[in-house]
Image (cartoon, rainbow, N blue to C red; front, top):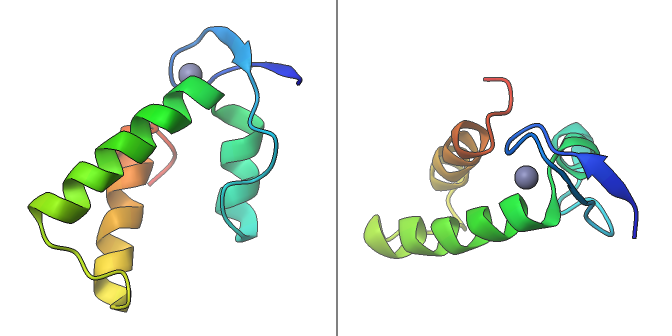
Length: 77
Ligand SMILES: [Zn+2]
């Protein structure tokens, strides 16, 4: 497992084994976000989905979750 300097927590941490989603955003997360920060987001996203009763079958709900993820991981808007 490779080590990266994570953009979010600014520490040298383990890199994700693979991009967590398709497209450039997934590649960026794999390249700049550590396993621990991704795990925090996964826990947070579960809470958000429950709290807002998001339906990931709906594009606007997916977009809402995507925006929350960018904010949480400090990715560009
Ligand atoms: Zn991190």
